[in-house]
Structures are given as structure tokens and as C-alpha cells.
Image (cartoon, rainbow, N blue to C red; front, side):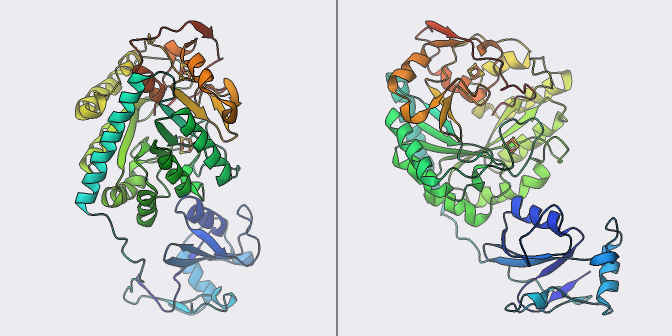
Length: 461
Ligand code: SF4
Ligand code: SF4
């Protein structure tokens, strides 16, 4: 049905207003501007909502009111017409409640008139992008040089500005759906302390970092310390203007993990949903983008290949990780998974030349012989500002970052972790590889079962 929109605001009649508004807010990133009363997402089927995202303003309103609301959305258009009682003209019944808004009618059957969606977002020139890539590479080389010269500082820290996530992947034990953002002043203090420790790379993770309202300030502060600024995101909230703001803040790296081609009950981080976001990144991002695909854990093996091919076609780098099944135990990849694994590694050889040899043992279901430098070279800072070995060993050592000193870094650097042989956390493997040839570990600790009490699926990031 073509719809000509007269007035200022497109209105969409929907069956379930709370679900539609929650989707618009949490997945698409709209802000709720106005509702008739405090919005009750779980129960309010009678309302409407005015939403805004950048220059786009629209309304969601219920298609059925009172006792005409059917138990399921059968033939929604016809029912909506019957309700409006205006033939092929759908009266926007909620518009009268928005007295200052010029919404009037949506007419069915007329030629489609596309409302102005948003002004085009300007993007950097190719030469600017190239220059940023070159300076980024030089800074990376300098950071590796400084790590080789001294073992007394962290190389990488992952820091959580917000535990909340807009998704709920069933294998993940790193999110909740309630927590507030860490106040920006506290985040800046933590970043400054990481800077004083001499941290080379600070990566913002979560939860979903893009939900933090002051994320750009946090990124800019990371750059001010001299560190390389990274971010791990599910990508759902990316839009052209948001990407440009990340450029301006100075983001260096972004990683998005895409788990499958079609969304399923385990993960909605699918290529189908995210492909538009990847195109926006290809168009607007001045920073480096890596797309991580996965095999294992029941995902159709071929999906990893499709995801990697798409990432490379858009000019990104691509890596592949292994998701283990519910037992959390290392198991060799099955034949189909192994074939895809080999193909993707061949395809992404350039990404793989960088310290990923440990994954060969994981793919074969074998333990790795390595020295985990967590607590020394790698720090995981949770939303409470505590230092942990990694996302799967929260509570060890579990002490405030504000009191973490170079002496702690040096002690943990030389502490052997009993969970190392079966560990699948790729960022710690990669960071620890810098020192694999030196400094045997002289003390021991047993941090507890990897998986923070819920050893389900461990994803390599
Ligand atoms: S894996 Fe990432 S996107 Fe999925 S629930 Fe966890 S934090 Fe959110
Ligand atoms: S789980 Fe892995 S990264 Fe974490 S402390 Fe153990 S060995 Fe290190």
C-alpha cells in the first residue's frame, strides 16, 4: 500500500506499542520524546509515543483500542481501517493529543511521498582516511616497541562503562538489562589512572558501550592519555552521524562480532540485521573495523565464511573465533566446521599473521602451553572500577583500579594462572604473546573455574 504523508510526522499504527517502542529505542536507537503518561513497556497497549533519531521524528500508535484489540495481529490493516471508519483514509487518531504537532492524516492508495529522512552526513576524504590509517599504524608499532622494551606496564585494558546491553545473547555472561551508565567523571578518573600505569591500548567493552551517553568524552580522554582507543560493540546503534562522532572523538579500532547470517534464539548479531550498519561503517568510519565471525556452538558453519567474505568485500579486516558448546570444555571442531575454519583463515591470512597460533590447539581440542599475563599486561576493569584478570575471571584479584600500582602489574606478570591451558580468551593470548619468550612465571594462583560460575559458551573476541 502506498502512503502519502501530509503534515510533519509519519505515524505508524502497530499492534503492540510497547514492543514497537522498545525496539525503536533499544535496537534502532530512537529517543522517546513524548508519551501520554509514563510509558509502561510491558503492559501499556493503549498508548502512543513520539520518537526521534537525529533528524527523523515519527509516531507509533496503537492500531486497536479497548475491546476491539484482537489476541493476535490478524489482518492489521483491515482492522485499522474498520476502526478508523474513514474508507481508505486512516485518521491519525492520536494526533489530536499532540496539539503542537502538525500531523493530520495518512492516505492509503496515493503515490508514495518519501518524507525527508535526514540531511546527508558529510564524510572524510580518502586522503584524510589514509593519513589517519598511517598514523594509527605508527602508533601501534610504537606501542609494541615500548612493550618489548619494558614489562612494567599493561599493554591492553578492557574497561566497562556500562553493563547493560540492548541484546541478550544466550551464551553471554557479560551483560544485564538494568544497570545505569558509570558517571562520566568516574570513567575519566579510571582512564587517567590507566594512563598513569602506562597502558598502551584501552578498549571499551560492555554490555553495549554505545548505550553510554558520554561515550565520546571517554574515547577522547583515552586518546588524551596517549593510548590507542578501541571499542567492542554489537553495532545495532550505529548510524552515520554516530559514526562521524566516533571519528571526531578519535576512535582507533572497532570490533563487531557477527555470530550468524540469520538471527536465531541464541544470537541476534546476524549479518542480515547488521549488514546495513556495516555499509554505514564502510562509508563513514575513519577508524579500523574488524569483523569477527565464529564457528562452533551450533552455528551453521558456512555462516562464518559468508560473514568473513562480506567483511573483506567492504574493506574491513576479519577474524574468526570458536564458540564452545554448553559444557565449556575444549572439543575439536567437527569436519564441516574445520573446513570452514581453514577456508576463513586462508581468506583472512593477513589478520591471522598476528599472534593467533594458539587457536590451532583450540580448534584441535588441545590445551595450550603459554604464560597468561593477565593482571600485568592485560587488565579487565568492570563497571565497579575493580581490576580482574579477564571477563571470565572476575573476582581475581578484584581490587580497586584506583589503588592498582606498577608493583601489582609486575607481580601479576610473573604469576602463573592455573586456568591457562584451556583458556580461549583470544585478546589475552595475543597480548601475552609479546612476552612469550621471556620472564618465566615464578608464583602461582588458582583463580577458579573459568566462566565466572556460568561456564556456558566462551567466545573468542
Ligand atoms: S555478547 Fe555482546 S551483544 Fe550479546 S549480550 Fe553479550 S554484550 Fe550484549
Ligand atoms: S581465563 Fe584465560 S585470560 Fe583469564 S586468567 Fe585464566 S588464563 Fe588468563
